[in-house]
Length: 271
Image (cartoon, rainbow, N blue to C red):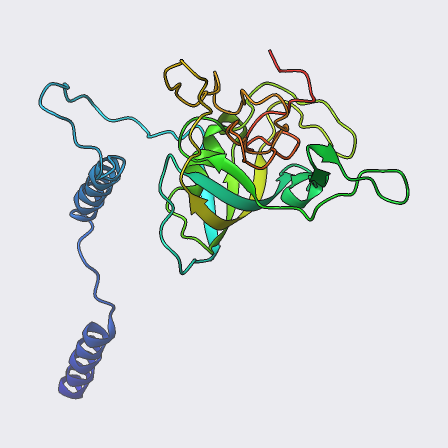
């Protein structure tokens, strides 16, 4: 009997040993965890260095901090044009609409600026005693010459004729800390206003030559003193300015957008 009892006891011990959970030693776990954390930290530190930052030999290498982007210009092509790519320092003819990004208020558009019909240098009067107005025409402005706010110039770069683009302009690339007052039929633009523009590039032509006077050497086309401003007396706030030249279409008076083209001539020039 004792022998049978010992056999059953041995069998029970063996069965218990087989069913007991296998546990891995814990002594190596902390070391493995620490190694993994160090590797992750090193990987994160390396990832903070943008791959496009390449320092030339003359610039000392320093520890990299977190890369900051204070503001940025964004745009999206709503329709890619089938014509030629617009060249800088040419006269671009565009249709545009501008909104204040904060509240969606439209402050300017290309078709808000109809021009009166003229004959022999005089306006043609209608039956109502008011000048007859021509159909609106795309607004011309010299692209890439600093005659409009930076966001408008840069935001149109690379467009093809026939293309449509929406531009999101931060206030730093628009009118900055300046404010544009309200004008008749054109809401103003508060300081530090981000702007949104829808633009269609209709055509690109050569810049018109400045008028010449007898006995006077040719003069270069006037350049505005600051991006976003226009040397043209009747340029509108928030609309790109066109060069003053004979035969060119008058500049539409548009309210100034944070990323808008030229400055208004009807509104007082911001200081």
